[in-house]
Each structure stands twice: as structure tokens, then as C-alpha cells.
Length: 100
Image 1 (cartoon, rainbow, N blue to C red):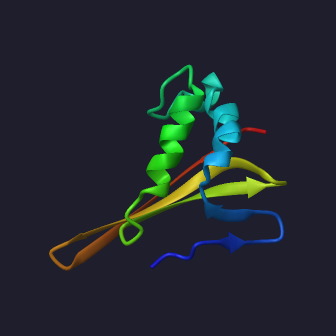
Image 2: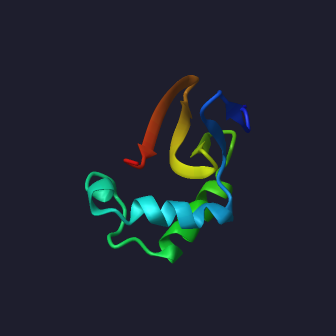
């Protein structure tokens, strides 16, 4: 239902990979970044690995999360979720990015 990759001249949106854990740990362990998000602080490598594993295991017919990659590094993510009930669909979109 959702494309696997989206690419522009500056950014690449692609599925999360376990190798992204270092970059996710780097931005998610920033106290300012985590202030308004429901994430633990301090954020550990295990937290990053669990987060990524959950993204990899998503039901892609209902939800898709892409890593936002810039210059070869994961700098955040974007998520789209579909809610289907009684022939009515609604969608939400969330995003999270590092400051740098």
C-alpha cells in the first residue's frame, strides 16, 4: 500500500534497519529532542534497537514508518497510520527529527 522508498535530491525515506541504531541513539539521547516525545531518557542502545525492531515488524497494510536519511545518516523518521473502521478511513502522520 505504501512505497518502500521515496527519494529527493536531498533526502531518502527508507525502511529502518538495525544498522540505524547508532544514529537513532545519537539523536534520541538528546534531552531537548526527547522533551515532547514519549521516549525514555536517557535513551539506550537497547531502546534504539527495540524501536527499530518494532518499525521493521509493523503491519504495512495499516502503518508505515520511514527513516529520514540525509548525507548517509538517519536524522529522524516519519510515520503514516491508517485506521479503518466501519468503512471509514482516517490517517495520521507523525514525524521526528534531530536538530543537527
